[in-house]
Length: 387
Image (cartoon, rainbow, N blue to C red):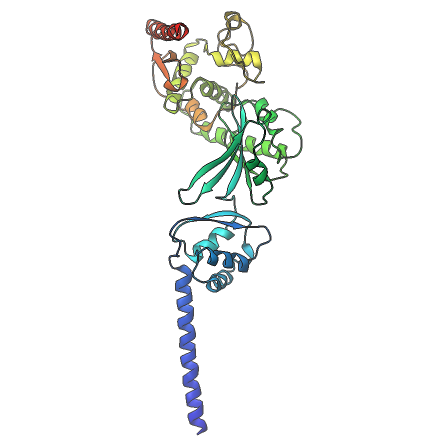
């Protein structure tokens, strides 16, 4: 009798073990299987959240089929304690394993509402925008010019939310003085900038910042990025350039940046200045004259006078030969790369095609060709004046 009981007990144990193994295998398949989301969502993880709370929220949003399996999977993969605060984009069909990885990986938030402080060449602007998970595109909620416009209610609302993200977007061609002045107006930052950084050494890019970040630290990050870009570009430069150092490459890149905003033209414009340097010709570029007048402290806001084109300043490339002593703005990566790898052309001259800078330039090898292009441009100016 006892032998029969023991035999039956052993059989039951084996059955239970098989059932448990089956449940575990089923749970593993559920954890890694394609999830129920039919479109992407933005998952917010507040500071101090727990995996249990997030799993319940995900289940309520229909992102996972079981909050229990989600928690067990996170525990089994040893990621429960790695939960990161932020707003994270979860794509459609994401498995529970994918979602755990997304919310524990760390790094910058990938969705939600953000305030963007845009530092442009002619003005600064604050934009409130929100990522639409369904289209993976940002939708603008409000914008205003600080110091000119009253901040809209939408801005005040998002500033009160703990999960709002902040970003500083630096445009190509801004000067270091402009950057420092506009950073003073970014109300989420703290601290002072003791001196204006060297011209050209701030990388035009997008920088995510947090409330309470130090302005000097943001400047340091901008400098570090530009240094890395310049170093990499200089190491891959073309042979035989009339440039003696990375600094000279940065100076030329800043001139290219201010002369054209058309991406496909940068290499051609770079070739014109390279050809002029090799021939010992003055660069004769207006942006350098303007920098000699403003020193990068604001926008000139008018055309150049003949007397200014003849005035002797260290940056007036109508008067000096070769490069000016410093960059005249902060060039972007594309202009730096164009400066060290210019197109191979014989062009010596260029002038705008139309009165719209976006239309690019006409290039010429000879002075006669250039004069014809200039005459065509002058006719357009006269037509506008008559209109």
